[in-house]
Image (cartoon, rainbow, N blue to C red; front, top):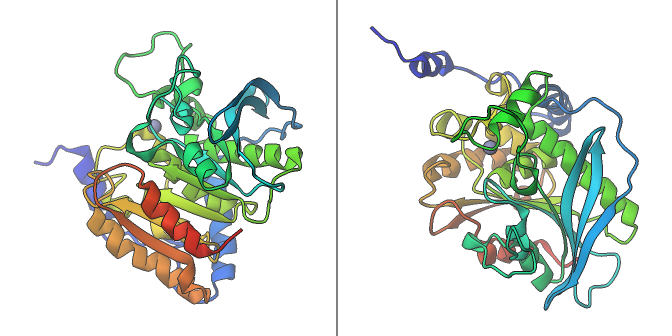
Length: 339
Ligand SMILES: [Zn+2]
């Protein structure tokens, strides 16, 4: 007698060949078909793109540059909150990274500021002070709060069960109207790019995206689908779906319905080719196993090789667990070339 639903799913996955996994041949031809399918299943908002109009909540001078907290619309009835960070002495147009936190108390970690009182300094754990890292290296940063995290947590639903993740309620709402949280988060990145375009002082030729954990996941899908992104650091978010998302306990916000019928994770990263991508994994990360990442990255490298750009994808192993490795990641970025 076998009563475990999960074992039934494992049985169903045996021998599953994702229908749009890269099988050789023209990479651009494959990417066109694969992007079309991914765009369909990821479930973007369907409403109109709002015209860009940002509001500044506060501006502050710090030892590494100027930080501005802003709000901008992302769809009808929904705004995003973000920090726009410009390093001291930077020249226009600014080389810029979009920075995304994973499951945590939110984007305040990116600027080493307290959640409740953003004038109070903190030290974000695991190198998660992404914007500080960018500004110290001369890059501007747009730190977008992802839906379900930090200042965009779900606060208002009645009857909310204690102990459920902050992603549960928004994910249920999204799935019931044919969207996903990943799709909405990628959509918000696209609106963040609208904000940067609207500013008129950003170098759009080398715009990058970096994130850790669910920030890396959004970055990976955003690079696959948004042509205005040009490079990425995907940290602690890469391994086979079959060894990570469905094999370990992961937050429900990773769900893209039916995705394993079409792709493995290497295919999603392969949609970035030939743009530069740095994949970073922690050697003892329990939810994105290093053995899976090491072998699966070869599939990504095969796609970049077929593009004639094998030197545009890097695999970096951090010595610890599920965290960002700032020095190791930025060392690789510096090898991509000056901006
Ligand atoms: Zn989540």
